[in-house]
Structures are given as structure tokens and as C-alpha cells.
Image 1 (tube, one colour):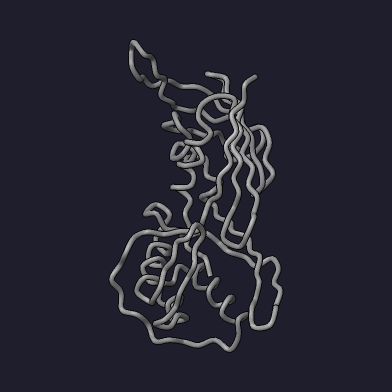
Image 2 (cartoon, rainbow, N blue to C red; image 1 turned 90 degrees about the horizontal axis):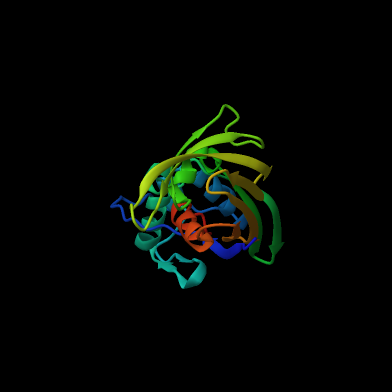
Length: 229
């Protein structure tokens, strides 16, 4: 069976500007305190608490050469980040520190990000090409769950038309891997997640049908975050 594979990295990013009055600067005693306060503010979706840590000359370097310099630019990034997920933000995403290492005045940190909306079946239609709606059974996101799936079937003569099929959840390794099978047209999909750095997650999508690259691009657009330190 011919399989298609696509790997990409999801980088932490944000895009929308908001005009806000900046809070008074609140200095922290050390790097560990900065990290603790930053994650607490992100988890609380508190823009004022976030920006109270950053002076006028703050610079944040994001992956792929993206750079925010100055309080206004950084504030713009975080203004988008603290919005609800439905508005393109990450409010509801919970960051938890898993390990830290101090080297001189630098604190290296490894963290885990979790959110209920990442496991909600309904969001599959937001990023998987061809799927337009999902109706999960009572098991929701669990091995053995069966979802009724609405999709668009394309025909070169009749054009696109809606169709209904069934999706079977096969295996789930929380925050690392999940696989499913679509009955019609028969499609097998596996998604793997792997943290490769503080601000980057490698995503591998393997599918027996359709465009893996398009799926990953749509997932990237859906799940953006702005938690880079």
C-alpha cells in the first residue's frame, strides 16, 4: 500500500495586534522566578501579568527567524496568545515544567503543554482535509471510539458532494501518538508528536490516502502558541 509521509515543526507564534496600556514593570529576583511567573501568567491568560515582566528593550527570538523587539511588538504577540482558542489564541493551554537546569545566569527549561481542546474530536474537521464535520460516540477521544464523519467527496464530473462515513480510533499514546481508520474511502492515518526543543514540536503525519503535507499545514495554522521565553 502506498503511504504518504510528511514531517514538519510547529513553531510558537502569534499574529494579531491589540492596543493596551502597559502595566508597571515588576522585576523578579532570578531567572527561575521569571520562568515561574511567565508560565503562571500564560496559564491564567493574563496579558497584564505577562507584560509586567518585560522592559522597554525586551527582545524575543522565535523559531524560523521571527523576531519581536520592544515592548509594543512583544505585547502584540502576547495579546493574541491570551485570546480564547476560538479566536486564534491559546487560552486554556496549560504549561507545566518538567525539568530545569541552571547554567550560570541562564535557566534551561523543558515544559509540557496540555489542553482539553487538543483532544476534542470536533476539531478534526478544522484541520484534516476533506472532513467537514464529526459526531463522536460517548467514548469521545479513546481507543475503540467510533465517530460519524461528514466529508466532501469530489468527482470530476459531478463535482464535490457531501458524504457520510465512519472513523475508528485505533491507538492513542497521550501527547505522543494516535492512529485512526476511515471506512470509506479506506484511509489509515497515524500522527506522532515529539518535542525537539523548548519552542518546537516535530509532527509526523503518515496517511495511506490524501495529502499529509496539507494536513500538517492546517494543523500548524490551527495550533499556534506564543509561549516562547
